[in-house]
Length: 247
Image 1 (spheres, rainbow, N blue to C red):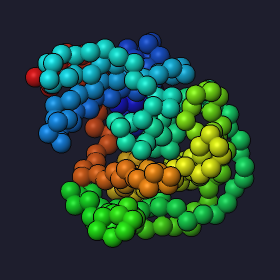
Image 2: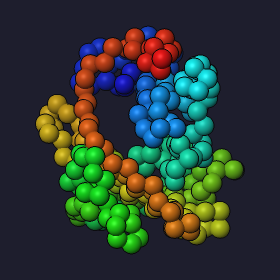
Image 3: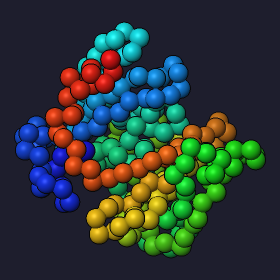
């Protein structure tokens, strides 16, 4: 739930109780599968200030809620090939990096990918055909801004990132990440889908792919269902809600 800079659903432009705490967004998630992750829950908040995510996690094995700071600056997202701030291209604070506009180009990117919302992952990725991660989606020639991003943090795993920012939607459909030696390490794709109603709904997500070229390993993300602008109750994003859902 976005808590500030709200444009579509009241209260606008911000939810006062969160804005006073400098909270930019709130999120409540629960794992349904696989079995060893089932019931794991997380409540976290992002800040308008350049700090890590903060919040709580519910651990089913302990039946307890633990408070913690969610690592974002260079930490792996749920033991995948994505970093926390790499989901969606770059979700970290602008203060953590140096940004340089390299130029503007027209590139083939999957902004309107046509990826299906389905349980069948094979309808989006060629899992049965080597190298098993090729997306079966639509690509378009799009005007993009090319950004060169250099982390300010010394122990950040990437030495440099190149982001292609779509000039119309300002999403990041393509990203290259380089290791400390300056060699290409990862390619990250983020495919979108056309909004069912552009006047009232944002673009739908299509798929995500983090490709580790050096390890020859990838993390593929698909979506089964997506809704937006649901007028969520701010009181849902509380520790008591996390405990209740976890139990």
